[in-house]
Amino acid sequence: MANEVDSFFIVAAIDLGTSYSSYAFSFKSDYQRDPLQIYVPTEALGKYLSKKTPSVILLNPDKSFNSFGYEAEKEFIEMKENETVNEMELKKYYYVESFKMALYQETENDPVQTKIQRDMEVDDVFGKSISLMHVLKLSIWYLKDHLLKELNSRGFPTTAVDIRWVITVPAIWTDQAKQLTRECALKAGIPNKLLLLAYEPEVAALYCKQLPADQVKGPYRSLFQEGDGIMVVDLGGGTSDITVQEVTGDKMRSTLTVSGGPWGGTKVNTAFIRFLVEILGEEVINKFKWDLIEDFLDLIHEFELKKRETDFLKKGTTLKLKVPLSLRELYSEFHKKEFENTEDISWKRDKMQINPKRFESFFLPTVTNITEHLRSLLEGDRIKVSTILMVGGFSQCNLVRDAIKQAFPRHHVVIPMDCDLSVLKGAVLYGYRPESITARYCHYSIGISLNKPYDPNQHVGAETFRSGRTLKCGNCFETFFRQGRIVEVGEKESVDVHSDHRTDDRERWRYDVKEIEVYTTKNPNPKFVTEPGCKRHAMITIHPPSEGWPEIVDGKIEMEVGGTEVIVRYVDLNTHDAKVLKLDSLTCFG
Image (cartoon, rainbow, N blue to C red; front, side, top):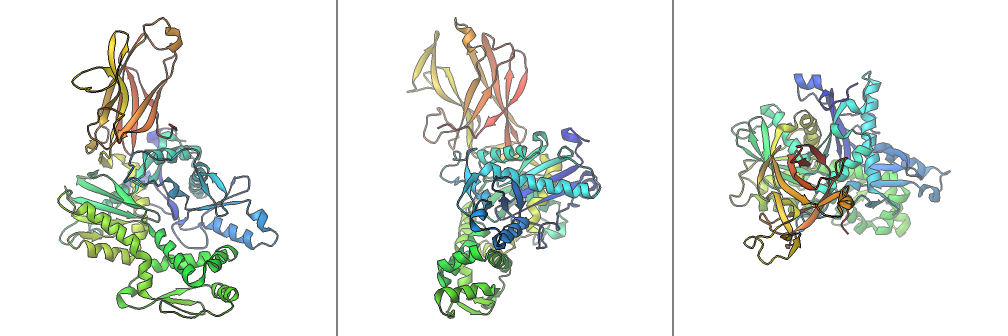
């Protein structure tokens, strides 16, 4: 079996979404003949014929894995309806949904510092807390295991080391969220050297670029011409993720800082449920969600389908929604009367008709947030964009498409036929050619805190101290990459580090572990890490050589732009030995 990074014969992508999840894969031999020959499972994911399964997980009382997706929904429903399982026993299980949103952090006001830590917890439907890392690990493990079982059952003996794995992440995620995802994937059994993280909107653009020209055609010519600016708007269940890509030959480069917000399709679902609470009562809906959970899930799945079919709004006709009869019966039982139709809703047996204006109001806040954010990016001549490319499951909604087309009539808006799978399939393509993304916009300045020889011209007003005979200045911000730059993937910058330990207590520090603090800031030209806006971002740990540190230590810290993650090395300038260091963004600084 394969055991080297370049000897994989399959690339597999895992898309663990807020609302739905799935995986896709392709064989290297297929990729070489036809890169678009990508397999996405449509079976063994539950009673719904779907290429994705809900992002819900069921754990046993001891927190071991029980089931995921549609299987988890089915198992939970059966236990709920099983008379031999009482409510007290059921509440010992953990049923967790929408857990990915715990990794989303507001980045507009605080772009480089989050509260994401390894000990984060999420609540299940019963309000019990459980480790987020444990939930993520088991979710990734399930999707990985499902793929391996599928391959082996078809006569392809395969283990995790035969595959290059790609896990998709929102481009607006912080380094802390990405690191936590990687650590969970490693715990799930994915080899570190075979794992890539991929930005969702970037790989979606790669997929669309690979499509035949007639499927992504502009008004007068094909898209993805040399120098074209493509704004990728990835609308998922939890977030909207926006990047701008520039076409450079057969590759692409990011030319604008990533942005977005919590404006996904689940916001519309939440608005719909609030509407039901308003007309039927909170007690009725709570009882419906708990006592009749299968019917509740059927209603939500039905609404998910209706979210996409919004052409009736243009005609002014009402939305016809199939609603379980049990909800109407529950209303009558609780309120001691039959439901009376209103201006917004009429309800006959299992058919509910909702006024088109009221239905549109479910979408309005989310769509407004998306269009206003896009407008803030496109106004003026700040960026060159010829096309808006809409991908992600929420882009299937006609109402959202029409709103963006109407808001930006001067731009060509393109929605691929399988826009909901563009990220997943694009991640497979990225696995074969990660060099397809050649450059990225530097969102912040990143550097380390160093003590430097005092320079009265550079260190005006700074505090000083003496180290031996040298007057030094502390807390200097030594920058690797500056905010606002377009940095090439593979580009390296370094900072020299020097230590003089010719003292009487040499044995005390000879085997000391050196810890270097990494800082970030939106300021492109920081001087000190104590300036407003500077945040401690991560920690670099350097272990001494086996014989201990020499009296004079001369080295350099090197940072390399490596895809979606920064690669850090320590280079000994005397021996020229280099070793990769861990950039630990999850270290708690108190």
